[in-house]
Image 1: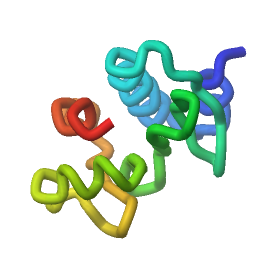
Image 2: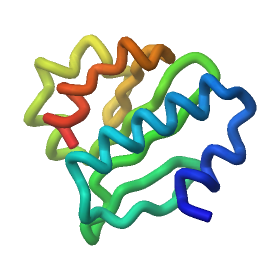
Image 3: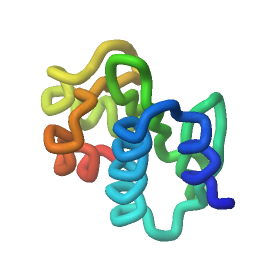
Image 4: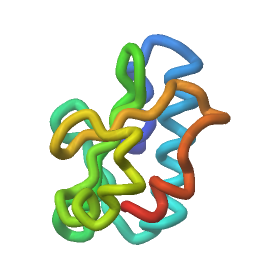
Length: 105
């Protein structure tokens, strides 16, 4: 079983599984050589150190890039930022900020 399959097995709705697969697809496209691992209850991408994590939460998608991209893209991420290293995206596959996620990976 792949990491995304393991993660999706713990999700309770098809909508959440679709969102997780969408985030996985976006990150695989920009980080094709990254190793994916489950960590902290999230899906993490490593090259060899952690690059970013994501998780599907009750009311949002949590995206957790490392500190360097957070500082570099501070202005662009301001509408999504809810904490020092936390971005929250709407739970709507058609509203995913794909370009932003690709730029800040």
